[in-house]
Image 1 (cartoon, rainbow, N blue to C red):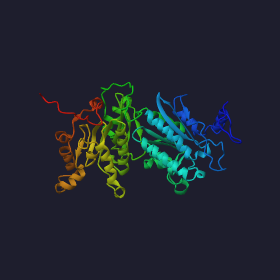
Image 2 (cartoon, rainbow, N blue to C red; image 1 turned 90 degrees about the vertical axis):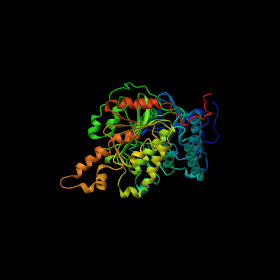
Image 3 (tube, rainbow, N blue to C red; image 1 turned 30 degrees about the vertical axis):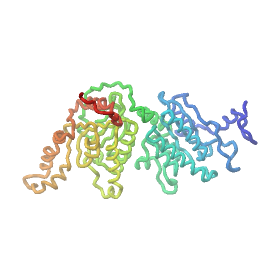
Length: 489
């Protein structure tokens, strides 16, 4: 057999080297998978093909064995029949320490992914930089960040944190479009033992995590499901799936009207009542995720009135703006459902960059070229109506239920500001608020002003939204340039 390595004590054949590389692939325990098991769990059975399998760590000093394999496994395979590239850091190989060889393997993987227009899944689990490599290890992190940044908006990128991602690794993972964490994950800039935090609950509350899972197997299963909703690249267009549901099925919003839980409405309109939420546990007043309407994958951004009146906080605005931006990158239609009492009234929020986060949300909608459909399902008070997918900011179609209430002020604030002098022993504040709501906030005012295209009956809601998405399916990202007008000669 051909000799591929020379040197004292080093493997001399491909078989010997393969045995060396896989000798630390010990099965995980308590739901933890090793690097290779994660990739096998991600890909369709038998489809994973490794790239750079024999790459070994550069020997910078006697402290590095000549035969030490590189600490990341890279390769490709299929997920539900679609091409996907992936890398998985291996704590069994020099504790997954990052070196310039790590960057070499990941850069090559990304070149192939970009050339072939396919997503990348990255599993981060490392003790940190290879200290022996010194500044070259720091350069490796920079090269990985540049590579991830260059692919952003071109191919979907999903990070999985089955173990430790700290410092520069946490920055790299957070540059991905979505990040999945498990109960054993640590995602933090500084070491968790020094500052605390970084656990699953912290990552979820802060918005650093998009998906949560109990263990590695569940995380990889959720990533597989998420990939099924995503196009392979930014030129492919939104995904069309086979579903078993009638697009004209009547919808029953009784449950939504009684509790105003937006998930009740979303499940009623979605194909087969199926939703794939993203960012659960982060800013619960706004829900984001994916659903299908007659097989067409759509992203949804929905305020949830059952959570603090659906008020928009700085974290909720950031969650929504990032999701809208992702959908716009990949041509995924966005369905926005509005039922909100307005912006959060909080001194703590004002100490945050509150206006800046809302501005980012407004900018995401204003610049979006993907189809935008908005449903006003309840309250839409103040500038929340303007920011969340109004016609003025760029929505292609705005529908409303007959229970929708749209206006500058909520009834309580309006009466306190405009009608306070009418409150007396004979005229209660409650009656004035009800009068204002019925007369001044009625959705018909917005419809007459042209800010709402139609007021939809409950039973027709699914059919109307499905029709809207179909109508907008040919929407181009940019209007074709005209050569000249076709004159009526």
